[in-house]
Length: 165
Image (cartoon, rainbow, N blue to C red; front, side):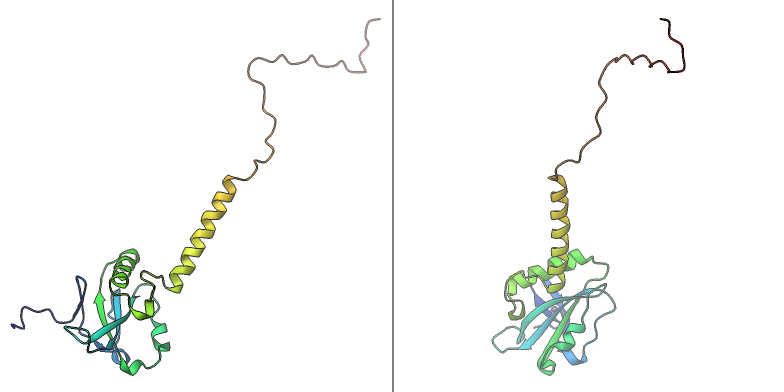
């Protein structure tokens, strides 16, 4: 096979990630993107790596949680740089990959990460508060003026004035 025809890296769906590298040696690219945490598995082909999870990196993504993963010496990572992408675009692609590969660390297909769940819960609370405001009993409105011409009552005479008898 001609090496110039094959893209270097590992392919998941239609996305070509970088060549897998040991997680302990990996530094994320300077731009945002998606990374796949991989474990060596001879049952997977054409490259013997099974995806354990797909994560976002860059912009506001926090990859410090990777340091808490046990046995990182046996894990690999492949990155899909996505410069100038939005968080929504990266989330959509990550969810597509999770749905397609059902990685063990994200067992429920399309499951959201804890950060996303907290954000969605906050949005839901905001939405429910808005709905509650719609169904609140209206506060007492000031009395409305009558429509049309309403004659004004004549002013009452003052007590100091003399009135004819």
